[in-house]
Length: 214
Ligand SMILES: C[S@@+](CC[C@H](N)C(=O)[O-])C[C@H]1O[C@@H](n2cnc3c(N)ncnc32)[C@H](O)[C@@H]1O
Image 1 (tube, rainbow, N blue to C red):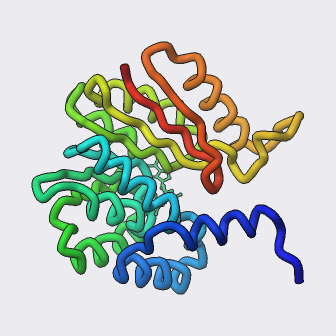
Image 2: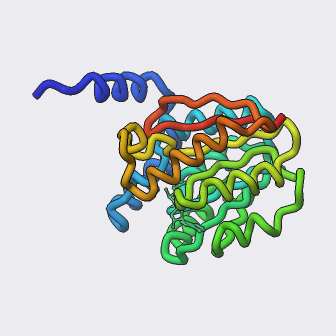
């Protein structure tokens, strides 16, 4: 069977990107076995992009909104320096249990603080201007509020990385009926019009927004 152009590009991109660690491969496999939703995780290419962004920006304190089973948290922890800290927010105890198990298996797990609570609650306890990097990847209707909180907790020059800004290509429809797609479309307009930030939208996987607080 002939593969589509998009699949061809994705296969080529993956083949020319560094592999992730064996522990992360194990986590992807177990996530699929237990939840059947490994596609919720950012995957290998976006994971490597996050690692490079963290290294290039010399980030030390990272906040993640949406842990799921811990793939992206561990990816970022691997890229942080020894004294680096990553606070990750998840409101499902079941997903958090899987994540915690993998954080405990990793030599980088000691950098991660897993907060099992609604993300807005955890974000509200983080002091203003104290964070270098925020990764947004939880419930889509709250993206706008997470963005506002990210702007508050980031220091000037800090980065925001938001996932799924194409929402499975549903945002390209003329009449958007899907609730998540509407929320993402509103978020994208909000970021586009925000003068406190510089930004670039990238067509990586399901679309990502890379944003820098001025
Ligand atoms: C797409 S998954 C995150 C995937 C993860 N970043 C990765 O790449 O491996 C989104 C996660 O956000 C969690 N979530 C949804 N709403 C939340 C909320 N209000 N507070 C905290 N976590 C939330 C969900 O339970 C889910 O595990």
